[in-house]
Image (cartoon, rainbow, N blue to C red; front, side, top):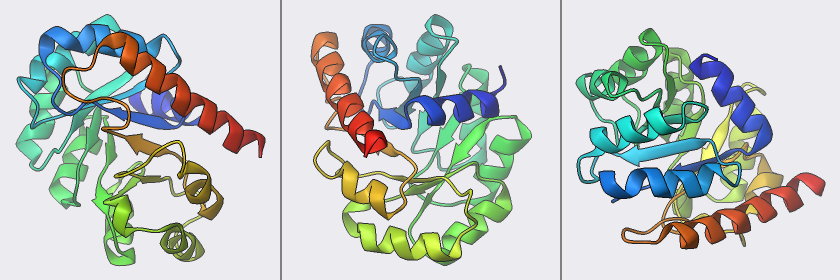
Length: 212
C-alpha cells in the first residue's frame, strides 16, 4: 500500500499521530509495538531525538503496515535522509515549500506546521497531505472553526501541542480531523506498558467523539 493510501486508512480508522520525541533506537520497537498493538498506525520520531534515523529504520522494518516517519523536519536534505531510512511520513513545526515538495516528489506524506490562513493555503498549494496546527495551545477551537470556513472542505487539520483526552472533543467539534499526541502519550524513558495504557485512553476518547 502506498503512503497516501496508508495515511487515508489510518485517518479513517484512528486519526492520531504518535509523537515519540526523545525515543532511543533501543526503545523504538517495543514502544511502537505497544502502539500498533492497540491500533495506532501513524508514528513520528522527531529529528531532535537520539539517533532518529536508526529508530525510524527499526520501526519501519518491524511494522511495515504502519506509516512511520520523522518530525521536526526542517530541510529538504532531511526529507531525503528520512526516506533513505525507510520513513514515509514527514512532519514539521513550520511550513517550508521545499520540504513539502521534496516529500511529495518522493511519494511521502507531508504534514507541515501552520498557524495562519496564509501558511495553510501555501502549504496546500505546495502539495501537503494535511496541516499540522501548531502550537495548539495558541490555536483554540474557535480558530479551527474559522479556518474551516475558508479552507477546502477536504483539508485535513491536525492540532498538535497540549492535546489530551480532555480537550479532544472541543477541537473535534470545531473541525479538527485528528490530532498529534506528544508528551501525553510518550515521555523519554516511559515503559512500553505505560505507553500502551495512554494509547488506550486516547482511543477511548476518539471513539466517544466519533459516537457523538
